[in-house]
Image (tube, rainbow, N blue to C red; front, side):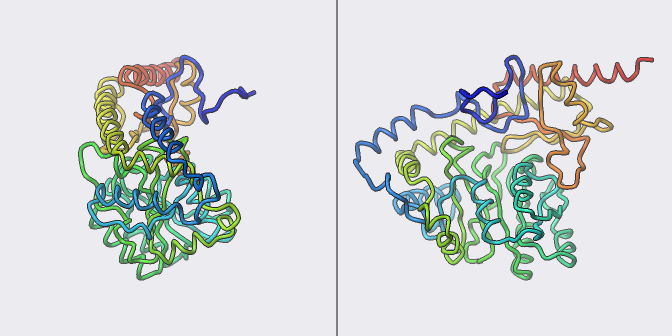
Length: 385
């Protein structure tokens, strides 16, 4: 039975290092920054933030966010192209509600973020996977699939993809945009890791193409500030934004998270968000190097490419069913996420995902050693008569 006093979504047993966790370490959550902004919000005595919010999101917050994104993305962002959400998960759920019917087809990457797949499945959608490689979505195969299927939308993670860490190249982005225009294909780009780049700058985000009515960029404060804020945004053509803002959910309940938006607005305006991102990039890049070195030392048989951004290492262990191996990992007090979770086709059984977000360098190194010991134990057992 779960502990009713727990407040976090994931609670790892004592002593276990769970490198499957895709959430930030508690020490990286900027409590004091948020506390100060919340105090400033109260001192402003703006009671409107306690009222039902504007459907599209508070105007002052969207203006602050537009300024921040303009600087971070390197191109002008108009507040009219922004719609406030409760995070990317709520945005995906809203798009499923408004743009699909049960039984419709949606395209996803192979592999893809496993909890997005769950949201689509909850809506009764049929998933068709499009393969990826080290350059991201294989656009040639997308075009071939469009001859056979008529999807409601394509969902992809173009920068530092979860779980693979790969980034969609500029050339493929341009081809994807042309194909989406030709086929009137709605593209939902989950760009949650766009700001978490360590060694390369990703191409311009899909938010640069709001002149197109079928291209959507999804952003979130979960990875760059704190997931418990449940705050994010959609960036898209104003016509599409108005369709979102005019739905029954928002007409009834008002815009999402007006109170939290007011707090985050002050964090943005103070420069605190930019400083927090800079700190996270420094910390996470150090951890990427630690995990890379540890994997090379303790798991030399693993096939992977060290990520240039984001949270995740995507490993292939040839000949190993990582879902079966996971059943033995608890005995070594280590955990991860097996590759099959990230496949809409029940494939990728010899892959696994490791994260650098929740543990510091020493714990990461210890966890990799435990995983190597687990793997060796299973090989020894298999070789025993």
